Amino acid sequence: MSNRRSRWDRLQSHYRLIRDCLEGEDAVKDQGQLYVPQPSGMTLDAYKSYLARGHFYGAPEMTLRALVGLALRKDPVITLPPRLEPLRLSATHDGTPLALLIEEATREVMSMGRFGLLLDLPTEGNTPTTVPHISTFPAESIEDFETAYVNGKKVLTRVWLSSDEQWEGSPITYELSLEQGAVYTFRRFIRDNNKTRVNIGEEIVPTVGGRTIPFIPFLMISHEGLRPDDVTPPFLALCKTALAHLCTSCDRRHSLHLTAAPTPWIAGSVPADRVPVSIGAGTLWNLPEGCQVGMLEFQGVGVAAMKEEMDDLVNQMATLGARMLSVTQVRSESIDTATQRTRSELALLHGVVVNVEAGLNFLLRVASQWVGADPDAAKISLSRDFIEASMDPKMIEAQMKLWQSGAISRQTFYENLQAGEIARADRPLEDEKDMIEEEGGDLSDVIRTFSSIAAE
Image 1 (cartoon, one colour):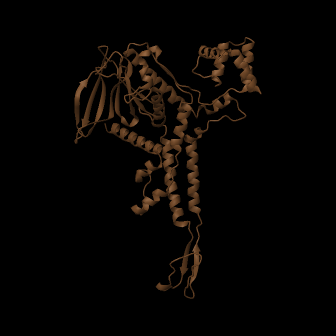
Image 2: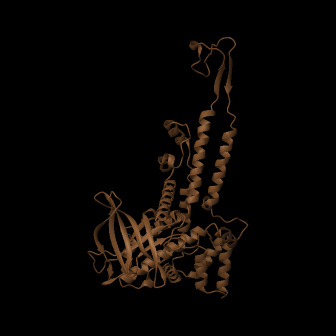
């Protein structure tokens, strides 16, 4: 149990660190000595000024924003059966549209490495048009879980989730369990002042069509899969490097504050009434004979080393993730070469997209079964095309000649235009033809015209 608790505490500290770094400089500095230790011998007031001078490099937030932008560069294709169409505009317990849920899940899995989704059907007030909804749980709220082998498969048998509900001032925890390996059961409880569990309300055994549910409809999506398991948050290393950069920035700017401005010095015996109290142009110092005067000048050897360390940390952050801010194609390389070159860099991105898509599709299929709809009619497709690959005019002309010569079909030609980001990826050929006919034209004429213009 102690190992389990230490694992939980460690994960919580990681999640808090990443959240603060993604929120930005103010959130990080508000934590004070948690991230920036107070130098030995420094007073509290001096430490506040020391911390305020430091600069937090916002690479984590910039990197996350760029990665999510690449993942959702093309709009998700969402197909739902008529019974589940309400989910398109309100998919979660708080009314979040399905498209925004996809973005939230992508962002959470990308940064925290874990995101919980619970499929739920209201037990009260159901009507023939009632549809299931999805409750979301960030990484921090997944307190613990248990797994076991049921019918030869490793499945989730129990999970504890923090909620935003309270009972008499105490936060309520949800317990989802699989009783006897076959009946999904839901409980709520609090922990009193002695950390003793106190159950709240009655035990709920959800049913669908009068039957109990033989599994826990909860998924822990990570960039490594859908298995209930602990994973290292992808942004942990990047955020720790950003904090190291902040600590070095505090040291460097504190040193500059103390030493950068030239400081006058006087050697000799100076009566109290003749000690200079001001300096600058137009100020005359009347000192006794024999006194020597000079200026302490900043040499900067130590501060220069700090700057080099900060530059190294910036390079480390670039290596860990910020480099993905600009996924570009070198002018001398082909699209295929650029794709191979960046594949390792985009491994995290690919894993996130694959697993978010798989997790949501699983829940949508289950939701379809619960309402008696066709599970195959519910599907979300996320693009794996993270690199912009617009087809150039010469390639368009070559594709057109292949089609005109009969080497490829019109359907293949159109699909190639979709892949080359000339035609919309989510619009079938039949719809495109209908739109062209409505305008009084033909697909071939449009393509010839477009190709000739582009070639010029």
